[in-house]
Length: 274
Image (cartoon, rainbow, N blue to C red; front, side):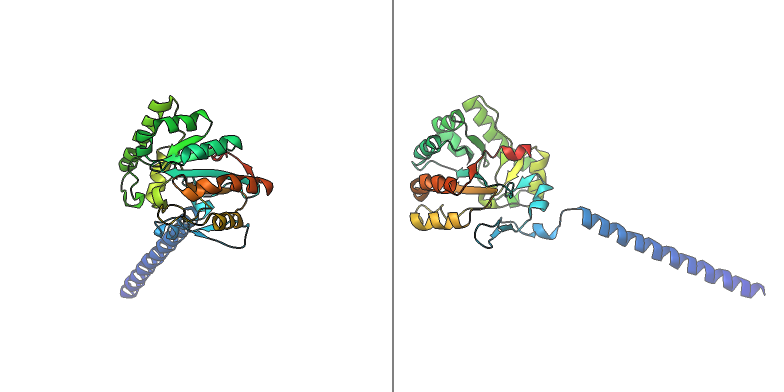
């Protein structure tokens, strides 16, 4: 009798251990699912180069990281897609002789723009930087040395790229640089986005751009106007390079064409208020 009772107790003990282990495993699975559902998708950040997929003309392109996923890191590639608004931005690491004319056109048509500048530009073109500020444009951070940001491994490295630019801008203009940052060449990582957010920056990609950066292979002006206009969409963050001869040639026609289509140009700072 005692032997049978001992066997039963042993069996019940083992059964209880197995039930407890099963409950713990089930709870762990539920916790893992909950974390994955409430966190930004990890798979989206396997990419390190910003990319777009285009649909029908006039529709918002899809990013290889979605607006919702970027929002978790205080980052944007497009504005309010329900309104016919354009955010015009220019990237520049050096001066190629076209910026003064671009500023003249922007002033003539009362169009606000954002210039994402590398430190070299501020070092070598202080008068143009001052003019941008004086005429109401935003000068934003495009890093000190234009590195591949996906290879940075610490917030300290990111800060070392951003701080010299904002300090030099204040020295030149007496103004604080707005905390807007664009990764050079659109290269990024999930950590880079998080570090930028932790440093108080809004990361800005783009939803409309084209191959305008190669000075030895400038695109045809008429074809460029057609391509850019066909891909224009509400809330577009437009990236142009101010070093481009084509852009200097077509900018005025682009502005008048887009205004005729009912679009309004707004400053990128609006995103900081949304």
